[in-house]
Length: 217
Image (cartoon, rainbow, N blue to C red; front, side, top):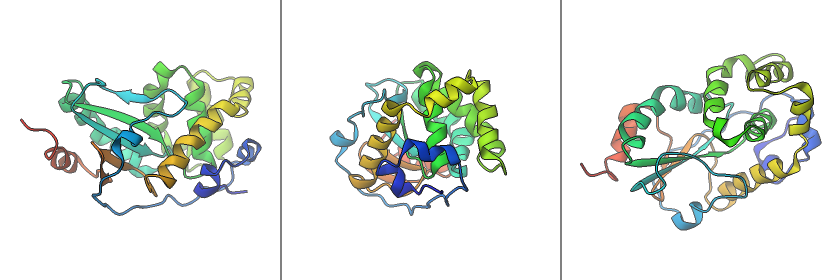
């Protein structure tokens, strides 16, 4: 059974995750600069917010991302380091990462990330993106992601227990459902800067061009 994004955000059964069937196509979205209800978007869900940078930074970027999305992996490997060094560490920007699973393997990955201590989340995201081709596009995705989970401290017992954690599942569905229904997120990665929809960020030059409207030197 392949679980679609729509089924995920409507709260598909946890037991359906065990099959790890073929990946659904990663949704693409066109860049569309438009405002959203920013105060509402800034409200965290029931799971701890995952972020980088000072909560008091004058600019906040929210990224909705998918662990199986190659464009998301590109952002995290090739663009995020510059964002971190030039804008996050100096206190100019805060980045909030929000899960937007597009298929059941995404959901499994995000559950595994959430079942580890919160202070390991960013390092584990980096690892999952670095190894994305090995697990997200494997002929045997269940075995591949189980093997990867061992690198972040899971045993088979804790792996199975994590995928049965209803609190984690409900928290992921809550964020994805609100993103879809309230903010019309329809693909990944999708970025919002201080309440303005930015679509994707394709390069360092694209990042700096979009930030220029919000950061005055």
